[in-house]
Image 1 (cartoon, rainbow, N blue to C red):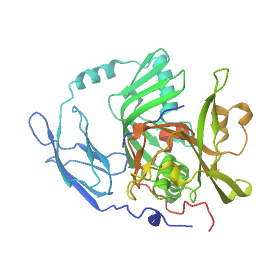
Image 2 (image 1 turned 90 degrees about the horizontal axis):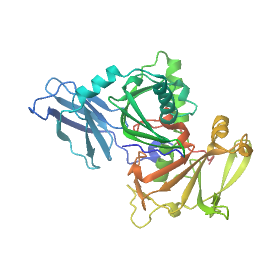
Image 3 (image 1 turned 90 degrees about the vertical axis):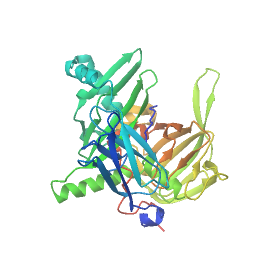
Image 4 (image 1 turned 30 degrees about the vertical axis):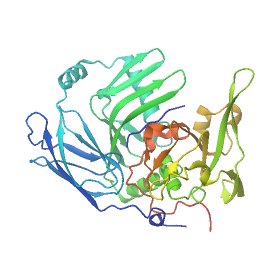
Length: 394
């Protein structure tokens, strides 16, 4: 799944009964000119930990592929990356032909000659801040090959592209991410980020049982309240149970032409046993049907649909003080606030899979806390928490 981000107790198997991890995909990778096998080509399922390399005959096999819609990607040095959409009823065998990259030698020459000037280092710092993120795990993340990045600044816009996958080592979550960056644009005037690409995850090897436990705990912390968590909870109709409360937001313009956001009162009241220091905390939330296309949705593929801004609050975690200092007005800093994000649909609806993928990813405009965490909190689609995610005490 391509990612588009604009800045501005129960058992999981019961919640996701349709997930299946038994499918297998195989195929052969060939060069476009001679139709010769390409040994050592990287073949991966985008946004997962599932990947392999082709053998001496250019053949590959991916095992344990989940049921659903995914993107298969093939890369090989000197050739253009190839992506193939795998439908829900996936084909089991593929013949994949790569085209030579006409810009390969030119890109390598430019990369070798480009000096690391002070301006480039400044752009790298901005890119790291607004691509990796500023959340609690960002400090443990390192871009290990920054030399592949090229920047272009025009006015208030900073753009970036990469000649090779951007490699992010996340020592907090125990993943190495190879991100095949399509583009990155940062609008400095409005603090908006627009980036797109193909991430591939690889598990790091823990040095001890303590480190392995720490990674598992950190992954569960990253998952709770994330967009992936929200989309999965929407699919399984467990938004309230898993701690998400919703409000419809409307933008109004006053006489001074200032835009302010006004929240509509929800039509349902939910009570949680405890939220932060408050027992029996009550929240207003919208009914499930108000954010869903009830006509065209199916149990396997529900459609998220709403016409205003949707405020999503996750009452299971507080906003960090660092986030409040950076993003909120001074009068709002220091209060216990649930993680709060805002979604705007750019099309009438998006379809949501049980694994949390939504299509098209470019059809959602995101603001708030989810744009603070970014790649530092990213988890693969084949990740599931080991324990309960419900915060309601039945």
